[in-house]
Amino acid sequence: MDVVAHGLWGGALFYPQGRRKFFAGALLGMAPDLLSFGVFHVTHPGWISMRLAGEISGPPALSTLPPYVFHTYNLTHSLIVWSVAFFLLWSIKKKPPWLLGAWLLHIVCDIPTHAASYFPTPFLWPFPTPFVDGIPWSTPWFLAANYAALFAVYCWLFFYYRGSRVGDETESRRLWR
Image 1 (cartoon, rainbow, N blue to C red):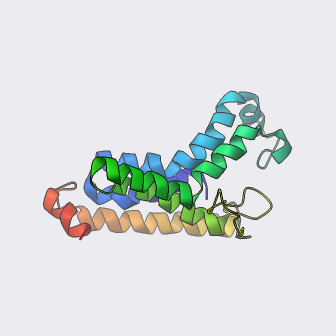
Image 2: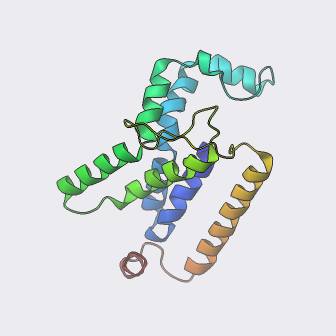
């Protein structure tokens, strides 16, 4: 799934809990891709310029990506790593870090939306992972369906919560029971 959609889905999880948690959920929903591909794009501005100018199309060739992209992708897209982070933070803070649910949603959404030929989701890393040859998120009909679903979810969230005080303690407790 594309990074913007990941952010919107992550934010939707925490929309009822107020603006700060919404933005934190959005950022954590995008974080796995920003930490791997974002660094590459920042350090290779020429690639983005050529892409925006229409000189190249499609994703970067695997052979052009530095090794750190693959390492961070494995770390940030692993359910094993996510579980360790979740339970470690839980033991330190003495309460579940529910905001990490946006990161979990990112991983779960990526499993069926990546082709095995280009960055399949290593969801069991560092253990051997049976890669899923999913529908690439860039497939036009899937991209349209994903954003239509996001539009429907945000419409529902807006209309459902418009009469209540978003972030109200009692409203948040009702949602997380």
